Image 1: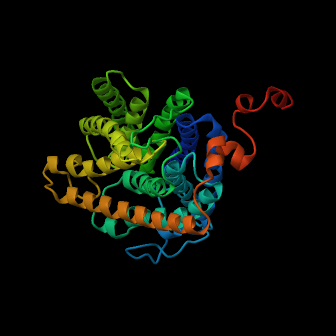
Image 2: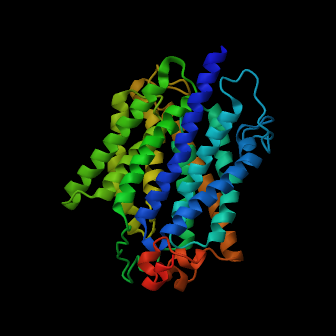
Image 3: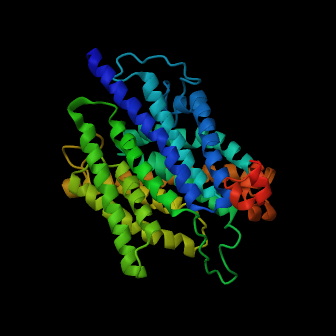
Length: 421
């Protein structure tokens, strides 16, 4: 490889890393807008705080567990406290690749923490962030991206429908079970009360930011400018997001009689999550179908979990979990002979059921690992120090109870106090 191509690959991957990290801004607006304003400052601040934790833990052990040498089928065993040393014959600057992978780890953690929203102690975020970033995410990432046992079976997950999204969603699932629903979410007869987010404009803007950032997520995962293939990946990514938004809005319109904006936004994100596994392996028509199905699935998935008293304020289980499962399995249907550089073609392209079976194996094992380990971590924390703030603190809001100030002081503080600010 000549020096120019090496530099171009490194530049493109760094741009991708920046886009993925900026997705955290989208998640801040998504979570804050989807919840009540008394928790907005807390949600914004903890996202930055936990990304800091994730970055340090990834540097210390996460990268080594995923990509370290002396690896086995389960985990890598070197490159801890990453020094920045360049790997010989690498097609991209190793430090750039490290930052790119660090960004993915941070996004998966952010998805997981969505299941804690509006009721978890700040100390729980700290402890769980360390352990998730050290022993949950890296193990699954090694299995698929680091040469682990699922990689040996030909598991297809180009940019992380399983590694990033399903892993985060299953951790969020464990949190929602142990934390229990928010005060006022369910009535004594089991019926659900809507708890509306305080700013739908924030949620819409967040989806646009995430949509743009996803080009770094998916197209950036080529870590190469060779042949301009990243453009094809970006095209598939956009088509799936568009299809998800349209199908989700239409299904809500048909079923509810009104076109629901939140469902439409979730549909766009579900399309993005679903195509993340297959964006480099499927034709454009396949990307459209994957997005369309994801938009419909997310509509019904949200209602499925709500009816079972699973209080998921930012819809992580449906957007990242259900869509992540569908996106992973879709490779086993739509991966083409020409594009399946990993594993085998899908069912519709003459590959039979083999790749679908591999994809299903990956979904089941990764989901179980992420859920069980996260559940154990949180259960131990619950027994030792507790997971949830007090009822009084939850009612007053985590902004004031955890941080001593409000994200919207003009709304909550007396006028004479706000004048002095």
